[in-house]
Structure formats: structure tokens, C-alpha cells
Amino acid sequence: MPFTILHKIANTPAIKRFLTENRLFVKLYFNWRYLTADPYNVEKSEFERDKLQRTLEAIKPVGHVKSALEIGCGEGFLTEPLAKISARALGVDISGLVVNRARERFAHAPNIRFKVADILTCDFGEKFDLIACSEVLYYFELAQLPLVVERISDLLNPGGALLLCHARALGDDDSGVPMKKFGAKTIHELFISSPGFTKVYDQTYPMYRITLIRKD
Image (cartoon, rainbow, N blue to C red; front, side):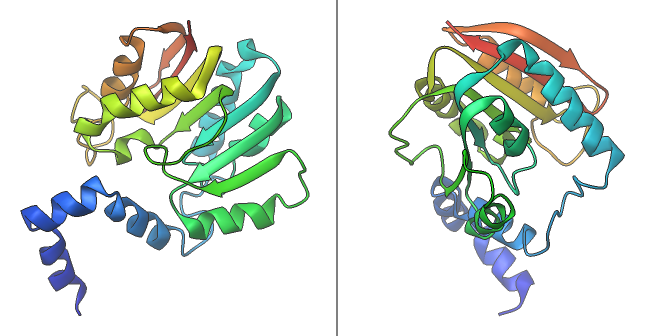
């Protein structure tokens, strides 16, 4: 069936609501996106390298932790440095394709695990001292964000840290990426204003924002 026909069917209200609520759209999108390795050019892009370095600088106050979780880990470019400051690190992604690639890439690292999981439905069976969400939370619907905040809070140990890094979006900010309906401003402010969280670090750059929050 031609893509244009599938696209029209998927965007009918009832079908779109079903796909959105069950996160099937997101899973299909990322399985397609990761058909090629490093689709976001993290390894070669100076912009991406600088952003990763600034992200790592932001978590220095956290120090060494027992456990770290990266939500939306992709190929593990951030999970790897998280493992260097934690006894064990877990990277989760909704795409089984990229999780398999990450497992192969870091098969030599004994304290890194990767798992196919959606944080809204997965039972992790543990809590974490550090959780990182980089360029991932705008792939939830706006109406789902309060549940995402609640879920991440439940996954954090008391005193644990949450690292957020997201693109700024013209949908909710005066600068940033035009194609996103909401971005760092909506996401980060929702966490900052939620009871039980204290802002530790917050830096806005022209194209993205990095925030570190501590759970009370």
C-alpha cells in the first residue's frame, strides 16, 4: 500500500488516537529512523558533540552514583558516559532495532545494560539515583506529560537527580526548531514547577536547554 494512503489512514481521528495512546506511532517512527546507524550524526556533528559535552558538565555536581537510567537511549552515546559515573547504567528505548545495536556496541562494558521499554508501561523493578532524558520527551503527547513527570519521579530515589536536555521549539518559545509543537520550555518548566523537585542547574542555549533537577 502506498505511503500516502497509509499516512491518510493513520491520521484519521480514531486511528490516530489509538496509535498515539498506544505509542505505536513512536515505535514505528524510531524503528524506521534507526534503519541506518547514527541517524542524528552524533559522532561526527560538532553541534552534537558540544551539546553532549555541556550535558556531561551539567551532571558533574551529581558525582558518582549507584544506578543511572537513560530514557530514549538510542545507540547509547549518553549511556556510555553515564556508566562511567555509576556502578550500573541502564539505557532504555522504544525501538528494539536500536537497542540491539546498542547492546552489540557496548557488549564489552559489564556495567551497561540496554532494554526495550516504554517508561509509561514498563515495570523496572528498581529505582535510580540519576535519570537522563535527552531529546526524548517531546515524543509524548502534551496530555501525557503530567503522567511522564509522575512516572519519572517514581523511578527516582529520594535525593536522586534528573537531567533534562531538549531542543527549544517555536511552538512554545521565541527561538528554536520550527517543527516541534512544544519543546524544552514546556517540558523543563513542568518538571521544575512540580512538587518534590528542586532546580539545581538551568542553562538555555540558542537551540536547546539543559536542566538538572534534584528530587527532594
